[in-house]
Image 1 (cartoon, rainbow, N blue to C red):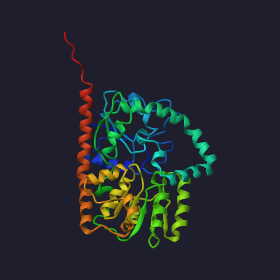
Image 2: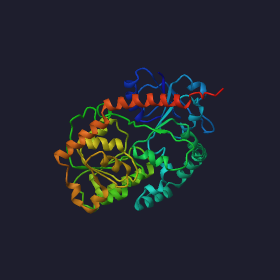
Image 3: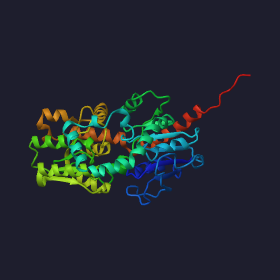
Image 4: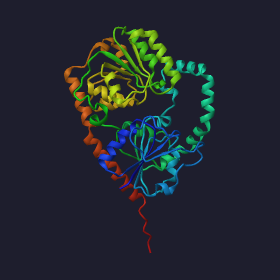
Length: 394
């Protein structure tokens, strides 16, 4: 068995490698597509760092590069990876682990994910950074046009597709008429023991700080979340806001807004932090507001469920539906708007135990290894069925 992983420089790749190595020891090669030879987020050794074509006219690798592998795994279907699908021989099964950003453009527009105030703020940020915005636009416009033109065809060649949440599979599938759409599989990055709370097992929340959002992305709808906290007079505890990745100009504006609203109680996380250090900070947050309209920050949410925080998600967020259907105790942002007392009401001991048990059951190492084995075997089986020679009658 030989499995090839195609990925960009991301913190998730270390998580994936650990699971695949446990499921299929010494069977995994990792190719990182990066314009820089020095990787920022992938810590483990990789087999190749590949500089993609500057102008995405064709795949970077050819069919001979892929021919020796039994399965090809795409960790997201980003612009740097998308065209590689067309070089892979048809008999080799492919698995796409979606990250959200690589398929939400099929489900809805970026603007529809923003609340009114955030939409206005984002437009103001664009105007202030007009020159850099124009430079970035001209640099990427051709690539994006090319990617949008070929992305549909690439997806139609994929064997299995695992979105972040099961509910998102149908959302993508129903987004357009497909000639062929990959079959569903369930897989998740990371496990409780090895990634999410490693070193913090049995830890519980030790403060009533508030965690808001997960990145410097406008889909967090920070403005509305921070304004709501100020309206609820949450001024006597720390407000922690991760802004270490995403849009720098937007992040700077949110940092400015946070200091205006909360002064010294505002704690933006600007620099990228190792997982252990990050967990050490957020475990102080007894309350979590994720104001996204789309699925986002699932890893953060899983960690905070484990620690026993009261979590607020928007009701239209598929993650809210997912966690509710799986029996977890959480609240909605809309509920908080109607009942301000919730921001000062911790979960009961029983509710915390329920959430931890369900999170551990779903994201435990054992389940992760089982899923990994199942999807690889299923991909191979499905590919054999699809490529089975057709017997002709004589």
